Image 1 (cartoon, helix red, strand yellow):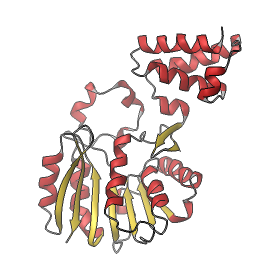
Image 2 (cartoon, rainbow, N blue to C red; image 1 turned 90 degrees about the vertical axis):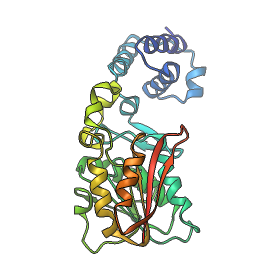
Image 3 (tube, rainbow, N blue to C red; image 1 turned 60 degrees about the vertical axis):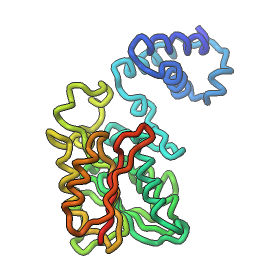
Length: 283
């Protein structure tokens, strides 16, 4: 069997297994396994050995068991960059790029901005790493409760040349910080999935760290905590920017408006028209 035939058969196998982008995933798995670019994969005309076929079949079986593709490949694209991921971290989603855009939209001169930005629940580190690249004078602090996640984040910062401007702290939200810490921005993509919705979720989510996904019965436990504590860690005029669930906008808006130190509360929708970000400013 040649690689081109294996690509076709794998795509069909994945399709029958309920994988949505079966052809694309087939190609990505082949490229990963054989160490080829996608162009090289399409041009490859050699036969696959029996040992290679067995090894590749084991890889495909992992995907058919609904292990996320990003964990199999060890990579995920975000902001047109490639990031290392592992089961210790949540897989970065494209919607989180809106959070980056929201920060940058609030900084008139990105090249000269020298403020400090706090990212809570950093996971793979995509948010502080991208912000460090886009804001070359800024200082970033990334916090996560998982030491294993922080190892992945630190590796990604090194990979993208911004390790010197990001400090990583292990701890539970603001508990990792000194009480006198103040930031120009506090940003976070916290857990916001309701425990009650767990049975109906995609099977791939069972492979991701539950502490990075679920936040109580209604999904709001961590958001409530972050909203109540964030004013103490923002500079006057500083911005709070949080990713939220698609149906949480009105509730989160009410929680933000209940904080006397916050103003300019806004819910930002994603490109599908769903609630995606909640933002506010310290008076």
